[in-house]
Image 1 (cartoon, one colour):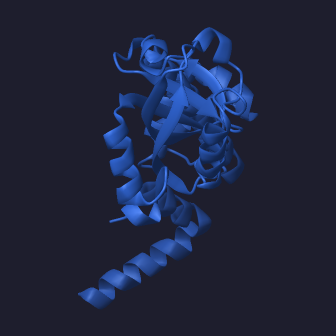
Image 2 (cartoon, helix red, strand yellow):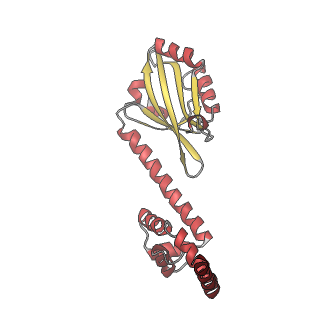
Image 3 (cartoon, one colour):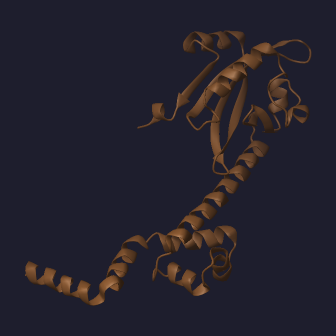
Length: 232
């Protein structure tokens, strides 16, 4: 029985040649592509014809992909993955900015070069700073040499290099009245535009004893945790 079954498949393969092998391949790989193509069109608000135009194929080809009757070419698959990734990243950035806009806790978004990009409404009162002045400016040169030194270490940790999953940092600075302020920042990086990384920072005012406890526990103002260290 087994031999006859195998022979029948062999004859079928010979009879249908590449078409049979293509049908088998499509049957295995196409299960995910119809959903991906539809998700891409819905995400970008594209008709089948519009997506076809962007990919340089016919509307009929897109229809066949969505109905699992055919597979996109390698080039089309790569282009659609790039389109979907770009749309995902745009959504992530909008979500991050909305998070800052509506967050009840003090937060900021910082980009490479330790440049301030955006803030939550409560950031100013918690940190004693002026977001309107800081937006677009780098951390360096704003809060004194000790903050500059800590920020340099924070950047060197790899937060913008894709190596670090989070950082916990304490800062000692003075407000506009010259009063000492101690802050603890919890930063998490997010990848945008394929390779651009921004950090969302949650800031809390802490007491001097809590500042000292952090220094005693971690031995430094900046504690970082790599992705490898949090891997299962």
